[in-house]
Length: 140
Image (spheres, rainbow, N blue to C red):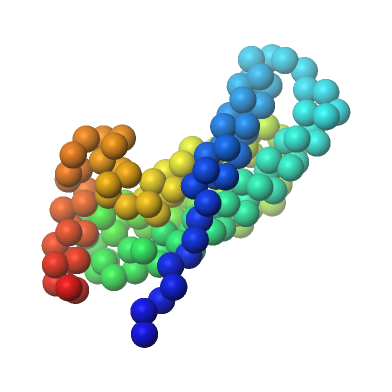
């Protein structure tokens, strides 16, 4: 029986990532954060963590069929390792938490959505997908 794919709301992920980037940019530019900004920081951290957990599960599930050692599997494994480490570590109560989480959420979202989405960012038929295509042909 086929597994039900893990549903990720791409628009919600991108909205949260954009908000995190905006807040982080202000803080990194030297702007002092007000109490409301600190509340937003904690909220964004929680939202990014939730998105990251779904993206980790969904991306792992999507590429589960790839054998270890292929370029695509290694690429995915590296992204999953970084994302997993971000979820596993405790909150450090700073802007750096959202600075690091936002791009990993973007990367995992693109991987989760698949090669057509990835190709929009890097061009048609990215080489990293060659291994996946070969594996998909064997599975189908």
